[in-house]
Length: 334
Ligand code: CP
Ligand code: NVA
Image (cartoon, rainbow, N blue to C red; front, top):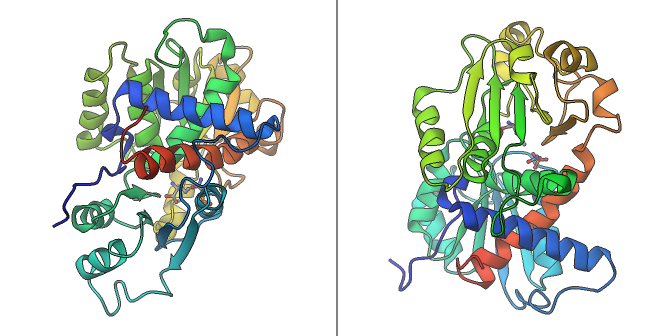
């Protein structure tokens, strides 16, 4: 075991409400400084100089890979991408041996895995911080980017709380599959006082154990959001500020494609659904990407209501913020 226990980021559940707000605020502040031409903030400049961050990915990725590699480079470190065809993990070497060995040579491991236990076990045996880059249960870097996007899109609501993000009272409607991206988004919503209404087809609801985790997250917040669930998309959409979805077929579920496409009929996000359900006039659309046309029409996806490309870019700023707190500041989120 290591001399000091590193702090890992497995899920948004690992953060207090204030810490989640701080990660988002830091991401926003770095984004503004760099994009306005002020340059890389002194606290970030060279902050990973001489350090290596291993990116061990068992699944495909565009945004998570590019954003984390870019973030490490911006901070002066060296990102080392290790795809599943590159290393011995899973074929010739156990997860335990791999964790001990990789963590002895790098300053952080960013890991994309299949089962959540894989990233949890990696963290358990790693002497350096491990950041979950997507497991079957959680996608915390996505959630940080998503709340940065909401923070930017709804500045008018931001008077309520001094320390938080001031998003209290906003309503998210999630229409689609109950999956990893939803779970961390819902946990974050509970912590930030954002209400979330989830519509899934019958048989694709949030599992009871996950519902409990989301409700437990609400207990950790001074001003908690609420979770409601339905099998009727129109019900979820009612009075929503933000309509969100994700693919109906997550990586690893390709064999269920035919059954899922059938089960999710009627769940496509369209202007008609938003109207029938009574979404708020100024509703906005979000999607973590990659997107398929069945879950959202082109009319919405490429419309001015769509925040998707800003949301994708925000993955970079979220990655910088997470690396700053978990690696540079050794788990102190300030
Ligand atoms: N949203 C997201 O995580 O995308 P990638 O799978 O391309 O990383
Ligand atoms: N739910 C999707 C998210 C991809 C970023 C998946 O797990 O494949």
